[in-house]
Image (tube, rainbow, N blue to C red; front, side, top):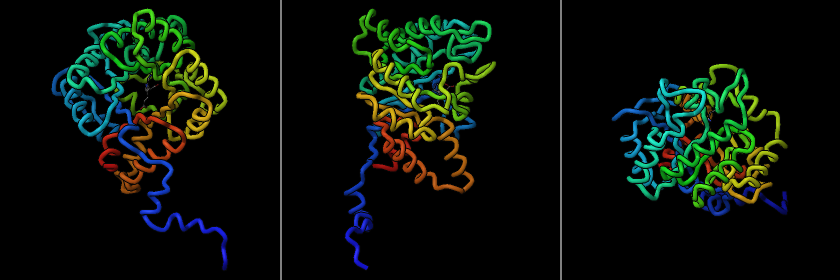
Length: 324
Ligand code: PBG
């Protein structure tokens, strides 16, 4: 048999495979989500996210220093708000002494070069567990956007480098950009969850923050997973309104969306390898059905190959350990 082209030539040894590899993960690719709770010396494992923890601020600061030493350069902060502080106005979300604002300051103090990104949405602060203000059975848009803009300014005041609106209200990126400008925060970035789908894979995250919606679902603001063109509309509008980075979320069941967005925008694209994606690998590994380390690297490489320039992932530390 004579063949003009033998594709296996480029696969025959680790050396040639590594020379021609198209996608290489590095610690620079990852954003580390952190869950912060009140208290001291708290480290609570999240039951649906084995190996991942809610940390009090003192432990969070220690963790951030360790992450920096490992070569991880960015954290994405989420806080678990006490029940008695939740309401339907996002009061605690804009409290200058709130847990989020205190956390930003403490992390900046302890590790000034670490990039701090903050979640901007009302669900952890909402007595209804929704990302916005509730009137009747509706999640109202414009009143919510106003709070989100104030919340973003409050995070910037505390020292956040990027705010990351994850709420999917209309017009929030423009409003946040304008509020940041008006308050002199010309260096604060916006990483917009632009194409965020209503997904069952957020389940474990809602356990982590006790933020599951009290009624209904999030389908009137998060996107319908049947849609792809709509993701382009959402991301292009966010770019126009002033987003610095756009995000697709979830990642694994949405690799086509990541690629589609990547092909349509001229700014970095991030993807969120979310809690349910983490839980699935952990569960299968625990059963002995998957090799966890290999599954982590294959998953993260696939997300990057799809077009993600940045990946928020609960596997960031594992990935760095496996890559270095
Ligand atoms: C809330 C928010 C969610 C996640 C990040 N921000 C959950 C939701 O929209 O219900 C999910 C992250 C994950 O599942 O890892 N605004």
